[in-house]
Image 1 (cartoon, rainbow, N blue to C red):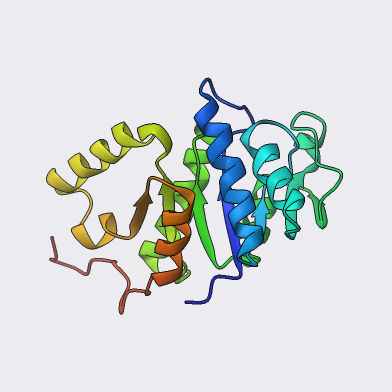
Image 2 (cartoon, one colour):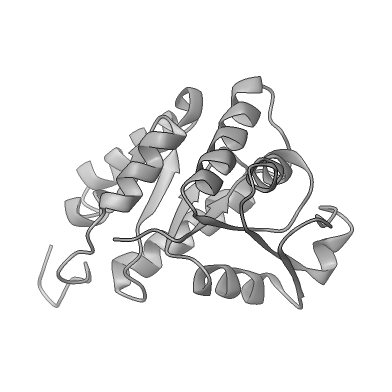
Length: 195
């Protein structure tokens, strides 16, 4: 697939390790160099701000989408190519999905997790055919990935669904992986009597 825009979910905090900020900056710069528009939550703080700043500094296009209620709390970025202030989180997520060819989660908190699982579920159910991945900086997602393996082992998630989630350790590898991704031939919804 041709990757022209990428939705990045990540923390509005920087995290405790400098590697998280460094990976966000590297991803933003690489996206700009490859002509990939960054679509993200519109904040100027934390990893969100860092990925946007790096993309802008490298000459990239950045689209931010932030709800009015979070405009002040997350400190909306004022130097973006486009900033959309919307009425709700639902509108924010729908607009981000509409503008994006793919989705990736960097380290973040419960908001990042919620966004990641929502777009992954949409992919599983066939509501979109766009790749979904996690950038596993410093093994940040290792415990979650282990739990997801357990959900498969316990019979709650099929291997097809589990394998939809793309995982890479570096920004370059993540962009390459998303660019090579091919949509599944069918959705992963089970019919009556299937296990």
